[in-house]
Length: 178
Image 1 (cartoon, helix red, strand yellow):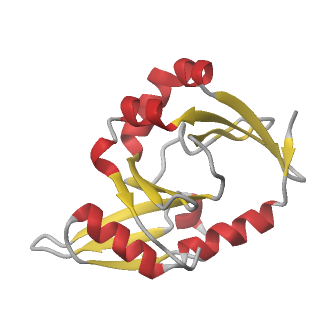
Image 2 (cartoon, one colour):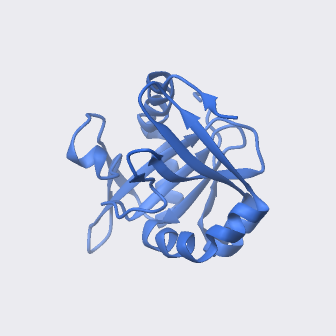
Image 3 (spheres, one colour):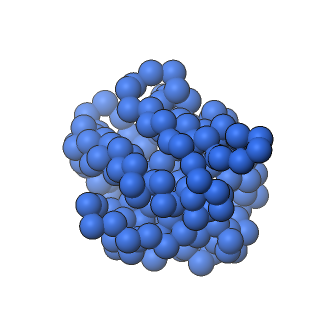
């Protein structure tokens, strides 16, 4: 069975979370351990399509510039949704399987207030290595919009954290706006 949803609605919902600079400022400061400056990339274009939602400048002697892709998960679940195909029929790989500009994916579980700071290069390697296990212990889903069908695997959070070695990359936040 395939879930159908209106992509524009989900995009707006995710965009509202992406634009919440108070939330992201607290997440990035907690993760990087230093004050940050965030530039929100809200317009559709090469950066957005390359996996950049935020440019983050980490304050310090070296002033690092870090590209981050944000994901907002509005479901109450013990799984993380890992996108394998953004379009199955056109053979377009999802964010867990393709190179992107971002250094991190900030995956925000809105209902429980957790953010996983996922190193993207580590995710690419882990997806190749663990995909069969993730499918075996999780569940493959397909989601359709008007013009495409995407495929993801719902991976149990505990398994994902272990396989990705993310124990130190989980930030707890509270946000009344989301």
